[in-house]
Length: 381
Image 1: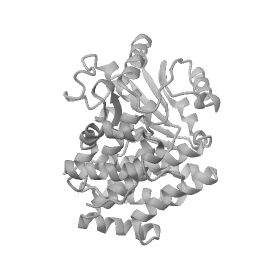
Image 2: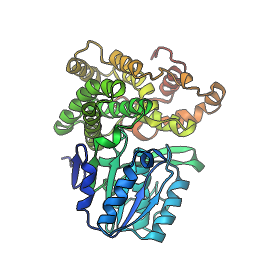
Image 3: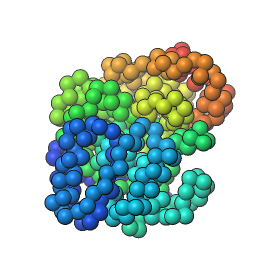
């Protein structure tokens, strides 16, 4: 028996879908967002105007950067406690959405804190807050998942928390918002989505529903991501925005794998974008996992689906097309720092999503994988 969740109450797609906010009921709207880009392109102003028409009051908590940590969540929680919202709107990339998820659950449950959140059972639903998620990048799919990734600075650990209470009530996929994404963000978040879909598809927990969704997401992303990167057409941006959300719906029910375990470890330590780390790690991880007969068969199916002979090689080709380096050394991760922190990186890479990798990963194998990933050398295991 398996319980499958396909998001929250609803998912609104298409250009101009931001207008759906006018259907909300509420009086106090707490907006969680990132830096300047959504102010510059007018998205925040549009949201404020819609809420103003609803006779609602807004508070904007901004400045959520990549790899949100416990400090920024606590600052947001402090403001949330002062404002007492009935609605939280997270707008931005995965970082603001993830931070908003954790703020909201801690706001509703005062007994939860960062000393006990990793050990205790989290509530599986919200009781007070309606939660709306509006992604401004196309990759994390945090708008439809039950995961929230936070960096615990005191533990030197970036890890995903999971509960159905994190799933937003409404996800708004407005393609107008993603038209202003710069190329590097298109590439990195797009490869995050590719990694979600692929790791889901080769996971041993795959079911009939998620198999179709994940496979469709892989096919759509390989077709439209290069166009979205090079030409930024409204069609390609909208397609990638939708397919990345499909990948999120799929992996939320299945799990991921070692690429994400490595990405959380590396990204948390060196403050690198999550999608960038996934993109670099994915070919190495797939090489390792392809020694499993079932995984190899699934990769062959994906190759046929997108019309190529070698799927892993096509992942590398896509990275090259998106100007993503093939090693951590090429993204200027200092070699001395890498060597100094190596044991901790290995330890953390074995945690989280690596536990659901389709092939069991030993400490010795992880050491070899991380070295190959750092130097861009051939993996020999």
